[in-house]
Amino acid sequence: SSAAAPSYTPNYTPSYGAAPGALGGGGRGGGGAGGPIAPADPGVKIMEINSLNPYQNRWTIKARVTTKDKRSWSNARGEGTLFKIELLDERGGEIAATFFKEACDKFFDAIQVDSVYTFSNGRLKVANKQYSSTNSDYEITFGTDAVICAVDDDSNIAKVQFNFKKFDVLESIEPNSTIDIIGIVKGCGEPVEIASKKTGNMMTKRDLTIVDDTMVEVNLTLWNAHAREDEAQWQNYPVLAIKKVKVSDFNGVSLSTLSSSQIMCQPDVPEAEAMHAWWHSSGAQAAPARSITTSRGGGGGSGRVKDTSLKSRTGISAITEQQLGHSEKGDFINVKAAITYIRNAENGGNDPWYVSDPESKCKCVEQSDGTWYCEKLSKTVETPMRRYILPVTLADSTGSRMITLFNDQAEEVLGMSADDLHNLKESGEEEKVTRVYKEANFGSYLWTLKVKQETYNDENRIKIVGLGMSPYDFAEESKQLIAGINAY
Image (cartoon, rainbow, N blue to C red; front, side):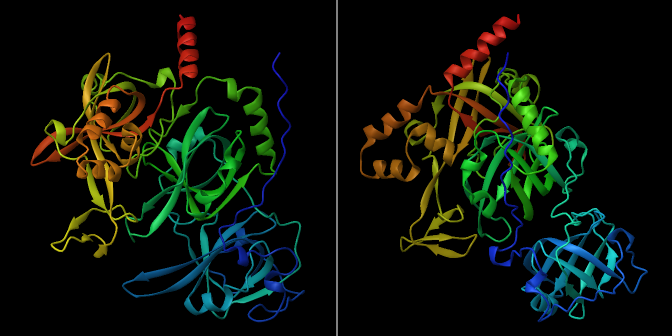
């Protein structure tokens, strides 16, 4: 008989997405009455959030602040700062509220996450569902004339309210929707620094693989502060619950956190205990889950192969036989293949790298005075970094194709950085350069490939990029082969 499942031990402090100094505790919101927070009126009539509508001019709600998020904005009409809060009342009603400019300056420091207040004198409008993450049809705008009163903490108002979606329905949810999820963390990637396409600022991301009791798994991207947290918490298959993740159609279906996401590892909720029991009683031993994220690539493709099972793989010949690459977003396949050719300057190609700005990874060009200049960010780069774009041929028993590997995978294949290989070449150590390429040839790996048709010089061609790469786990490969043989 199987061993008893380990008992479930809740262990989390909600991550509210506000700066640590802004996180309020129990007692009175904002440290009690004073400043912009008015004294409580015990005789005020309280309305439920779900009863609010734009045709009411006078109303007062009593609610807990569950999130607080400050940001700057800029458009054709001007620029400024705002902060958003989300409110939850004792009936489970939720609504978002926004404070702009002067109201932001007046109330931001006074309103504390997790504290309870009464709110009145706000203006209601229909919520934009594309950006709304509450269950309300409306949202509130508060000005400097808002009346906000600190009240005693009310245990009848929950600290957080979940509306969990099962993973088997994620494919039917509209992209950019915001949902709550709960599942088991199966895998954790390394934090990766990337440049924002909009601002050029550096951002940190980390990919997790999570599965739930519908036997569906999905890729979840943690951003910035969430991505930099200690990865030890994601080991040993913990239960993860998140209030507010965004659904994306990137690489099939994937999820990503927002600045205001509430992330809870081993949460103290009934659904978590049930998920833990499922995983340890049958989930971990069940057949491989169906993945609805087709790869874990992106940002140069530094990920591992997410699904290493035999049934997830196909042969390289499928690219031609199934005419892959003609869909709008491309097609994704897993293969087990060896490198049989590495194109470089020694065999008729070019050096397989480009010179980049180390922070943004954008391409740099050499100036006449020997300095390097990043045209995209309009700046001189004192110490540039070379990054690989490595063409290789992959082959298996069904065929072979040329693919492109980006920096992280190419470094693993060649065993050194592009800067180091460049320095070997510049110092005249051609034999060592040749040995690097020779020793990398015929290395075998598991690969996730993206296959997509592109147009170049008015000519259509199929481009194949390595998005995921993993060395063999020979013990696991053997187990899978034995299980496959026994299945017949």
